[in-house]
Length: 275
Image (cartoon, rainbow, N blue to C red; front, side, top):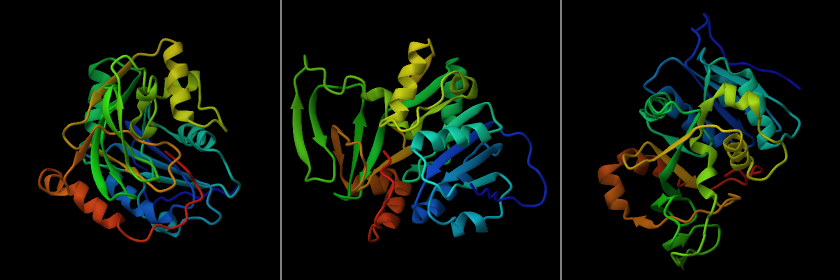
């Protein structure tokens, strides 16, 4: 294992939020994610990136930001193992996931932390969110708690429309997954870390926490806090109920349209298959 940290002279104070990112062979996405981190309203945060790419990231090693900790591990690790390493390195008592394909608006951490403390929760996540598909080049919105009626199946395959009856338990536990919006206490993680080598490690982590009695708070993002990006190699499919015209997104969420435009380059072959 080789360790590498991105720091500059001086040591920042103890952060109130530790943002963690497991990544691998996704160098092109890291500058976008750093901008999301750097523009967050609460300045007292740190960003911990655990990268199992074949080679260290030139971008991360070139950063001059004392809030950033970059750890390159040349051997292959599961997403769960990388998450555990990142949380173990975290100095804050609040952990926030920033996955390497997503966009997080400047108010994202402020709002999520307010939900965590205001609702006296151990864990908070989005129950509804905006999506962008790099396959279809379309925007959508998905309410995870609305499990019947018309849904659009988003995957690497052509889009399909599905109509689930009211008495059908479609997506019974999907509101526990999609860990790109997880925010939780480090105490909760210490009581039950992520399971390495498990598909849907984020959903399994939350489900285990709920079985231990954790207090979960979730809420719908209808103001544009985050954009979940569906890539051609995502393991998990998405099932949004609403397709959004790009003109509407450009008018009301210009930051989403700008981010999507930046992604409309030829997609590299990705080794990782992260949700």
